[in-house]
Image (cartoon, rainbow, N blue to C red; front, side):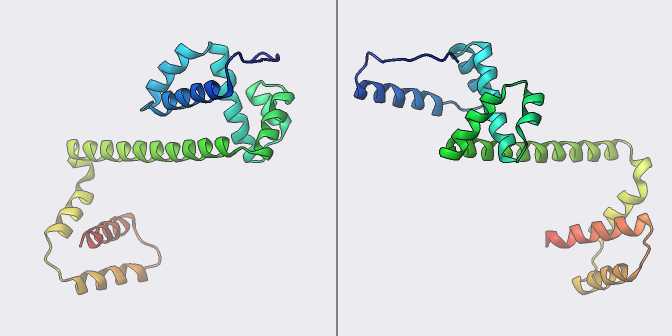
Length: 183
């Protein structure tokens, strides 16, 4: 953004009201696609990039990256990095809040992706049962088995005693533990 002195022609109260309206507009955004549309209408592409880089600079500074590394990766000047660093030292609550929420969203996305991959894996197994018949047989046996909980625990304990378990034992143990958690 340009560096120049700006004197508003509005009163302090009018400035406050505009700021509150602006913040209300931002807080009414429901998701990332709405935010992208709003920012594209509000800012130039260079301004959007500059603001996004500042958030990334703050994130990297909070991860204790040095100025040189940040400047190389994000292609920003050290003066920008120093300015963001100073804001983080003086206040930075907004940066910290947004960065924490970004991390939480990234974790959620990773979990969603993992769940999607697992469900795809299960679909593949159902479509190609001959490739996975031992595992599927074990699952069905455990589910249909009327073994008492004490017996299941004994079987699990005997699996724990085996030092080098074949892959099949590991699968059986995993399925039994999963079945046990359901109850």
